[in-house]
Image (tube, rainbow, N blue to C red):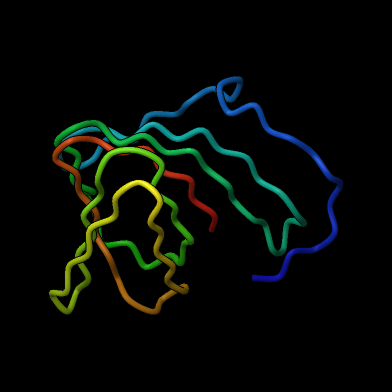
Length: 113
């Protein structure tokens, strides 16, 4: 990830209006900020998954993801599965390994991609 120059700033995540994204089941709420230049934007999100959320797609986008609350299960296309609990993170590059996430209990995440 190349971080082109941009000014120092702070974010009050509660002041960012959430957008709703339906899963195959459940819903995700994203609070999103974008930084950097248009050719190489950096998207930063606070994401909340409802209990019972299952992503409606296999994601190919790279992410750095940090679990703040709850429990998130992520399955890779090759069948491997990983569980994140508070204080854990995962990272994967663009087009490296497709992944699909779900949660039984709900989860709150900080995501950079």
